[in-house]
Amino acid sequence: MKSKNEQLADMQQRREKILEMIREDGTVTVKMLTEAFNLTEATIRTDLRMLQKEGYVQRYHGGATLMTGKQNTGALLLERQTHLNEKDAIGKLAAQHIENGDTIIFDSGTTTTAIAQHITHIRKLSVVTTAVNIALMLGGEPGINILLTGGTFKFPTLSTSGEKAASFFENVLAEKLFLATACISPRLGLSFPSETDIKVKSAMINSANTVYVVADSSKIDKVSMFALPCDWSNIHFLITDSGITPESVRAFEALGVKVLIAE
Image (cartoon, rainbow, N blue to C red; front, side, top):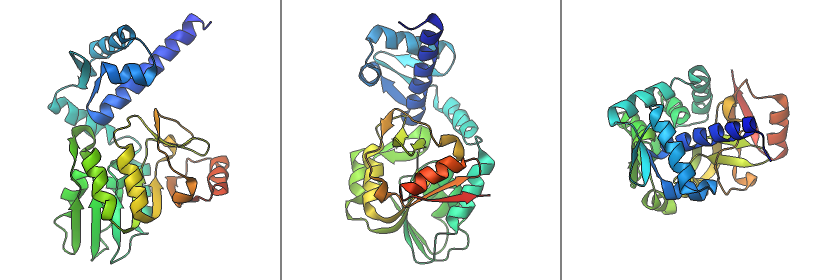
């Protein structure tokens, strides 16, 4: 039997994970959360009620959503300030692996956006992406051809998702994929707060010859709710910052993943 303090810690951790899921997708249903956490509807509704009281979400019948679009925009901009220097360094290093004439896939996310900001040296490039903001950023650059996937638009991540986005990659052949992740662990792989993008990310991996996972060190040795079914042989590089521990570097490289550290 867990102590009261342990129960409170579990509750807080669960609510943080629920909030991660809502920030990822914009909305969740009570049914989805009861299945994900294997808890009663009454418990989940209490969690959502507390998150609403704290100002994070707006409840509706059967679920909850982030606050209004205007508030969402503020939250997104704030989120992008997290580990800004590390992400910029990772973006600069990752951009050095992009060459003229490449066909590349950009996953959505703050770190992949940082890569897009550093490819001004490229004069000819084909980009396939789920990231609406990256498409807008690069779409006006001469010599860069943009293919934006279809699918359901997710405001919190400025991306497209779902079956249509995944099916878009069926006939795509790319030299390189720059894949974002919420968490990455040598033991448990890549994981995410929501399962909505799992099929899309798997489809991206299957379409690329070389896969670069880009993740700042705060995401390493962490685990989120939903695992990405993926063999380590499909992941070729991890680009991260100097906060990664030597033990983690050795663990990833023992799996065949080359670790590149941005300074």
